[in-house]
Length: 113
Image (cartoon, rainbow, N blue to C red; front, side, top):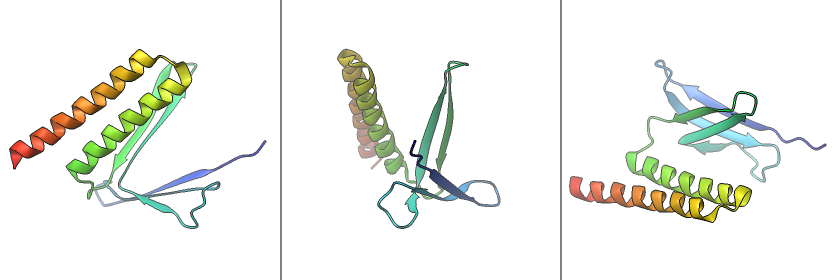
C-alpha cells in the first residue's frame, strides 16, 4: 500500500495566534512548502459519530478573503457531498446557500463603503 504524508507547520506569535501556515505533501508536484493564510481540517470519528476540526487563520487574513474562502469551501463541500451521495437536491441547497452567503457579504461590503 502506498502512503502519502501531508505536513502542516504553523508559526505562532507570543499570544499563540497563527503568524504563518505552511503545508507540504509527499505526492505534490511543488518542490517547496506552500503558504496559506487559512486552513480547515476535519476528521470524522465513526465510533463517536462526531467531527473533529482544526480551523486556523493568520492575522493578515482579510475579511473579504475569509468570505471567499468560506464561499469556495462550502461550494466544494457540496461537490464532495454530491460525489459521495448523489443527493442533488441537497447539493443544490448547499450551493444556493453559498451563493446567498457570498451575495449578502458583497452587499454588506458595498453598504459599508
